[in-house]
Image 1 (cartoon, helix red, strand yellow):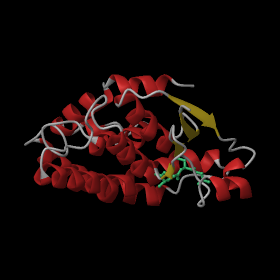
Image 2: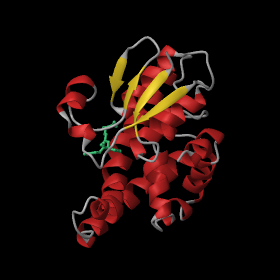
Image 3: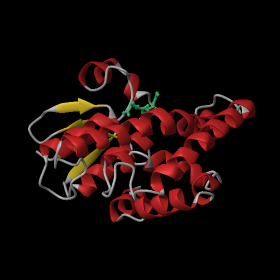
Image 4: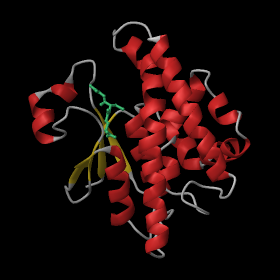
Length: 215
Ligand SMILES: N[C@@H](CCC(=O)N[C@@H](CS)C(=O)NCC(=O)O)C(=O)O
């Protein structure tokens, strides 16, 4: 059996998983979930795949199932250690600790602001939930700018968020960061020289380029 990803190749959380699979050099198949038909909210999907009714879900070759995109990526690194790019440092406790610190930076200081900006500006309309609340967007932007000023300091001392090597902590930023650029908010990255250097490096990885080409 080949690794199966239940999701949609253009969805942000699915892209996080597909980029990890590509970095690891693993073969996979995307099983499209029919959002328009509400497949992800069906009793069968909730029971058999993801009880919260969201994508993605990964089913490994041996039938093992896991959901939550960041957890899936960590699982893939642990399960397929030694294949492709090493995405979580394994040298010692300190390097693993610094990886966890960097991963927590993304979930604490990037995602809570970047994803609602994209929700307000893009997904809200797509879901027929009305126009962006510009006051909320301004507040999220102010918060994200303050956090990225700290990124700038960190990245002035090291090339990647966890240190000298590219890790999952950097990769986790790609889908929502790319949406920010797509909606004309690229100055979050462009205006800070070290953040820009980092962003240019991580977005030019072949894995990310390949995943963006999937239709
Ligand atoms: N924390 C979850 C978030 C999953 C999530 O929100 N997925 C979105 C697509 S990126 C989804 O399925 N949205 C459909 C919905 O909320 O109904 C993860 O990282 O996997």
